[in-house]
Each structure stands twice: as C-alpha cells, then as structure tokens.
Image (cartoon, rainbow over all chains, first blue to last red; front, side):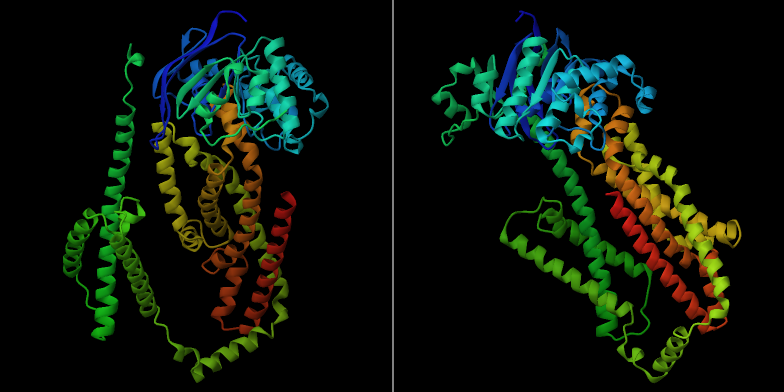
Length: 257
Length: 356
C-alpha cells in the first residue's frame, strides 16, 4: 500500500431534485491500494457516495479529487477521461441484454474506441485479446460467446467484473456487488475483488451489507448513517456497540460465510 | 475556499420544494378554471336549457360565454386559493382535512354525471329508432344481401385486396427509418439533460401529437387532392400517421428501458452515441419489431377505411358498389375484408409471439 492519495472527498453534499438530502458533509481520503468498505443501512447514502465519486451524479456542494485533480464539476470529454480510469460494478450487474459475454466485456473499453468503430463493432485485436484475458481472470473464458442474460447471477457479476477490469482501472467502485447473490456465490465474487486488489494493486471502494464479509475483506471501513460518516476505522474495531450505533438498536448481526 | 464553507442544505431543499409547489399552484389555477367553466357551461346548456326549459334549439352567443367564463374564473381562482379544490388535490397541494376530501369527492361525482348526461343528450340516444318497423325492414334487406354474396366479382376483389395489403406494407416499411430517428429525438430520458435537446424534444412532441391527432382518413382526403385518387395517396396518408403514432410508442419504449445498463456504460466513460448504441438499442430492438408488425396489421385495416375516401384498394371498390346499392357485391367484399383482417391478426400475433 503506497501513501499516495487516490481519492479525496471533502465536505460532500448531495441534494436530489426531489429534495432528498442524501449526503450531508462527508469527508474522507482513500490511499492507493486500499480495500475500503462502506457500510450503512439502505438509504444511508452509500450508493450516492459511489455515484458522486465517478460522477454519475454531480455533487451539490463540496469537493472530490481523483489523483490530485478536482473532478467535482467536470463535464464532457474531460469527465469521460476520468470515468475511463474508474471501474464500477453494480448490485444488479447491469449487463447489456441480448449481447454476448464478450461484447459485454468489450463495452467496458468503449471510451478507447472511436465512435464509428464502436458503432460497427470493430474493436482492435489487442482489446479483444485483453477481453479474453479478463474473462480468464474471472474464470469464465468458455462463456465468451454465450448471451449474457443466459448466465446465472454469479456468472453475470463476474462478467461485470471483467467489464470493469478491461478498463485497467486505477479505482474500482462496487455498489453492493453481492446483495443479489446467494451466500456461497457472494464469497466467491468477493474473492475476485480481493484478488484484483492484491494482484493488480487496484484500489477498491465497496458498499457491503454483511459484516462477516466486511471483516474478511476490508482493509478499512467507513460507516454512513443518514448521509454522515459515523465510523471510520479498521474492520476489527466494529464491536457490538458500534454495530448498534450504525444499524440501530433493533438490529441483530447475521452471519454469512 | 467555497467548498469548505457551511453548506446550507435546508435552504436548498426548501427552495427546491417551494419552486415545485409554485409550479403546481399555477397549474392548479388553470385546471380549476377549466373544471368550473366546463361544469357551468355543461350545466347551462344540457341541464338548464334542455331539461328545465325543454328547448329544441339552444341559443348561442359569445357574450353569454364570456360572462360565464368571467364568473367561473373568479369563482375558481378563489376556490383554488383556499386549497380545497379538485385541481389542488390532483397536483398534491390541497389541504389535508376532511372537508377538502368531501368537497373533492362530491365535485368529481358531479363532473362525471354532468358529462354523462351531456353525452346522452348530444348522442340523441333513441331506443324507438332501433325497433321501428321501417328500420327493421331495412336492416333485414341489407343483412339478407350481405349473407348471399355475389361471387362474379371475386377476381376483381382479390386484386383490390392484394393492392391494399401491399399498400399497407409499403407504408409501414418506408415509415420505419424515419420513425426510429424521430423516436430517439422524442424520448424524454435522452433529451432532458441539455436545454437545446430538450427544446427539440418539446417541439417534436407537439408536432407529432398534432400529426397523430389527424386521422389517416383526413390525411387520405388531403393526399387524394394532392397526388390524385389511388393507392399512392392511401400509402402516403398511412405512412404519415404511422410515423406519428409509432414514434410515440417507440419513444415510450425508450423511456421505459432498464436504466442499469445505461448507468454501467456511462460509468466506463463512453460518449452519448455509444451509450445509445450499446445500452439502449439492444433493449428496444424487440419492442420496435413487435410494434412494427402490429402496425402493419393495423395499416391493412386502416387501408380499407381510407380506400373509402379515395385511397385505392378494396376500400375504394367497396364504396363504389355501396354507392350503386349492390348489396350482394358489398357482401362479398365485406367477407373478404373480414377474412384478410382475421388472417393478418392471427399471423402478426404469431410472429410477435415467436420474436419474444
């Protein structure tokens, strides 16, 4: 883990047009090579936070720096150039239906292909080779020609991971990547993130629900509650008291292995 | 530095909500004026003149209308400002109490009944006409002729109906590329982010709504004068209407897509055209195909109707024999139309099933 800061978020606010105040002054820094996990109840602002970092949403106030560059209000080509370097994996996989697994992985590299070539589906051989390599990393090279919507949930999420891997991202965002998978599959998908983090040194910011997964994979944890950071520290520091603080008095910890 | 300052979120939220409420209040004022004016007019003409005074010819003057409009405007503005009106309820800015609830319920009921009564009077519903002796005799004559079709014109009718099917097919196919382009330009989710594109969206919606509101039969009349009576006029009129109505259907399909893939592709840094091609097109290609086939089916039926006003094909033939009161020939034509429509309906349903 180097000491270079990859993402720095300062006093971040997000107010949606319907008046929802999703983030209320969030500040934190992420160092290169970290596996940062964000926990919190549904509606605590976790998803909004990730979508502000890769600027799918524009923050209402505050500042976000990516590798020392202020990206808070970037637009157009400059913004796409940043987004190109940040991968994202979603809870519902968000693969393109009716397209093959290979085409889905290639779609991760659209920003490096001219508009015309992408329209006629003409990707350079280096990129296609890279796509196969990414599919090998997630262990499903034999599925390259299969339609993406014909795969199981776990396999679909692995395609989604391959799609972000082909970007060679410096930062990988994962928005509850295992929330719609069964426990066994969840663990195997999380292991891919761990491998990407350790082997390629990719920084990962991941939203998670299950504390057992958090303790196993995170190098650092941030807890959000109603749009504010209520905990920041090591996964081992989350004890019973903090758990109730974050999830409310009624909450009970459930195990997932 | 500005971002270190205290962020006054409550003020931003309050501002956004106030703007929303003001917009809704303005809409409510206009809608209430319409509601009240409508009920007053309908009450005066349908209930007061027709039922109380039992007039046959209703008096009409713009002066009266203006007076009624002024009165109802004043009444409705006062009503809306108390926040107890129907429009306030519709736009979600009504007071939340029992009295408002009763007022809104009773008024909605009054509006519905007024409309129904007015409709009954306007339609001149008369059970007597249906069962009068001369009426029954006429019906009997037509039905007998229709059920004993004249087969000597079978060849002629066959050619005419083939013309109709091709005409409908061509109208559908030619309209397709234009429809696709227009549907992207009139999909709200693609056009709303930018002021310029939103302007295009808005104008296009208005134009399409206008064109669609003119029925194909009217277009056929226009084109039969423009390019002359015949199948070409029929094709043009169907094409225009197909473009306008399918552009709406298609753009609604675009608006209803799963936003997930769009978000995912956008997050990789792809540009707008790439997002459309990779995240949107694969999701809408099937609905588009399905709508188009269904539209061909509709167009065959419509082609028959517009044939009546000079759009060529079987419709033109039908109106000619009807004009000569040759009901046995008309009978054959009607049977053939029914048969073709039934087959088209079945085939298009089967194709659409197979696609999904």
